[in-house]
Image 1 (cartoon, one colour):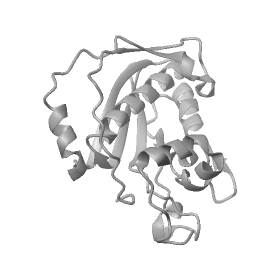
Image 2 (spheres, one colour):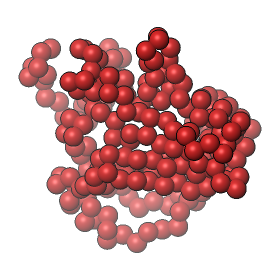
Image 3 (cartoon, rainbow, N blue to C red):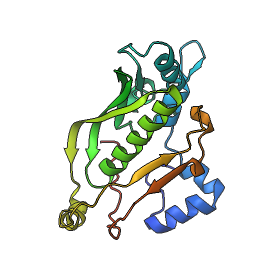
Length: 216
């Protein structure tokens, strides 16, 4: 369909169609060459596809003292008017890059995010990058250090105000523990069943709509 001719659809119906209809998912569920592609199949000028994450893990094993172990998702060739026609990302990556650092045998991870949705995005990002740090520490034989999250712009969307007011009424509970199958030594061998959250006692969920602003 051309611009302006995409039919409106409730979010619940869209999610269901993405799950149940492969043809629909391929057409409307693709964000373009964003995180997964840039992290693990960065397209080089000579035709290679560079696996940045695998490279980072190799460097952490061989030269952990290096301060240049950085994985980037920010590839101007795929962004907006800079992109090759027809290859633009739907949303320019918010998580622009992350850097590994080793100090006294402990692995730390710092991530810079250019634009942060505080209510829905930040909690998910904290948890997912902390988990990335844990699995990379395991496969490189290092201890887990700190996760450092750096914001460019931080905001609360207006359609999240009610949910945020409900959230701040709650008293934080004790953090759960993440247990990971210690037998896994390769980043590509992890499966869902290799992870277990222990002692998780959440409050009832607070739902809020995802705010789509075109990668603002």
